[in-house]
Image 1 (cartoon, one colour):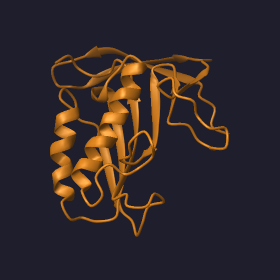
Image 2 (cartoon, helix red, strand yellow; image 1 turned 90 degrees about the vertical axis):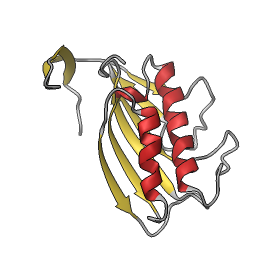
Image 3 (cartoon, one colour; image 1 turned 60 degrees about the horizontal axis):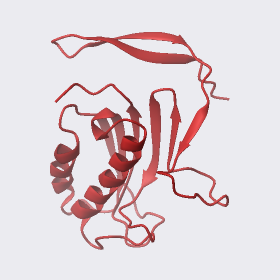
Image 4 (cartoon, helix red, strand yellow; image 1 turned 135 degrees about the vertical axis):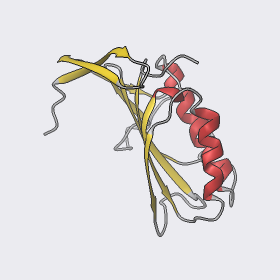
Length: 160
């Protein structure tokens, strides 16, 4: 239903921060990004998907390798863990969090939510993404206070 027929390429970044983009036809394969870790076939999603220089990062919570929330009750540290995971996935694809162009935050509490802005500044050092935030009644993972999904364009971030 959603065919990707165009590829976006940054061809100029002018001083006003207006990017001039060029599009070309594309027929590129989907690449599943898992940082070399096995991904169970029973899951109906993947951690990240790359097509060309675009990467979509699935909704992610602040968990460790075992799937346990790293900082129960601490939305700021959970956010930091999410961006650590995003950064590792993007580094494996040749990018970084600075290549993220859009995020969607789903959070269950506004308590200390303002502190997540400081975390974003830690990871978005040369460019800021677009973003939306939605307060929800709950998340699937027990003790998760925030879940974030993102889209990145590898190579789009201005130099530091």
